[in-house]
Image (cartoon, rainbow, N blue to C red; front, side):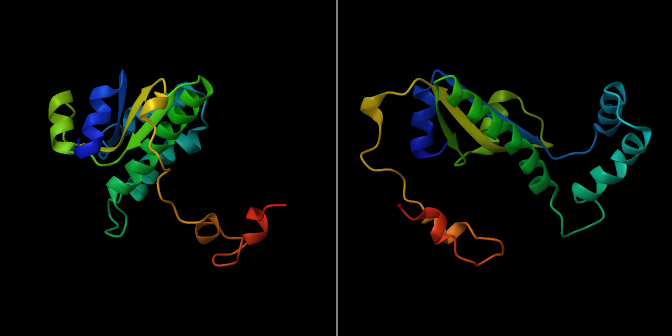
Length: 157
């Protein structure tokens, strides 16, 4: 972990490491899981071509790692929401020394680590004095089309 993230990991009672599978070696297993779950044959038979397409094989413009990160972060987001519902504090971190984390946890090379999440009960004394700096919502959210202002959505009434 890098700098402050290392401290957060050491202090947290629970740390979840999300590993993104950047390989496509599990295609037959994915097909069988879907078949066992009642997926139509057309869907199951199309899995290999979808994995190939979305994992970047055959298309140098599509990154296997980027696709795998997206899949892993769906699970990470759900983890964050579930923790919040149960009154737990979370701290997602992306400043990660992947080589070290993978070595410590025996994670195979085909995996990459998009996010590590520290989990526990909030310590009010440890809260930062000021919140993290963020762009204004009107700079990152748009109305209907990219670039159209959402100012009316964020105005105080």
